[in-house]
Image (tube, rainbow, N blue to C red; front, side, top):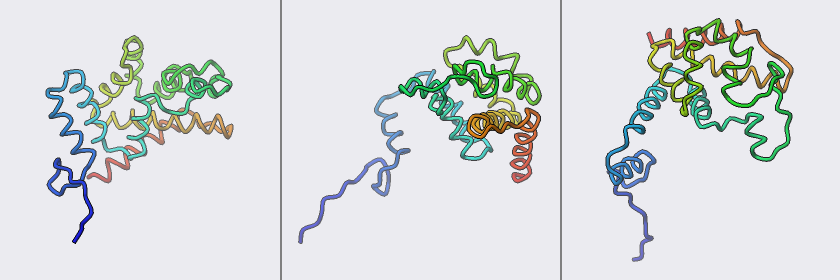
Length: 189
């Protein structure tokens, strides 16, 4: 009797490959991870463990890797598009502008999380700006959830302003972010 060849992965007890098991095998083969990678792993561990909706976690991952469909990213891919910010009509040069330096976004943060403005200038000089944002937010207890939800609120509001010419007030974005956090906190009690 002839049987078909099958692949068996020795990284799991059942012989089936998973990304998680592949990661652990690769990590063991490479040896000790550098402190910089351990630092980032701690940030991501806190982020993935945060009590926010999965869509917000995925969104933050996309922000950190600069793969959101921004006007600048479209231009980098050779798509000719007007680079005016739909919120302030200034140049939408980066995620930093969309989420922090645009006057609209700045107002959102000032209303809900004014602490971030104190850190912003120092972070702008950092190579790993988003690591700084995620690291600081992850140490704030429930406030990290507010910061994550504010980032999320700014993005779809910007897109509605761009595509539908509809824009919520900064206070409405703050209220929505706080409401989402309150729902999460209430559901975990």
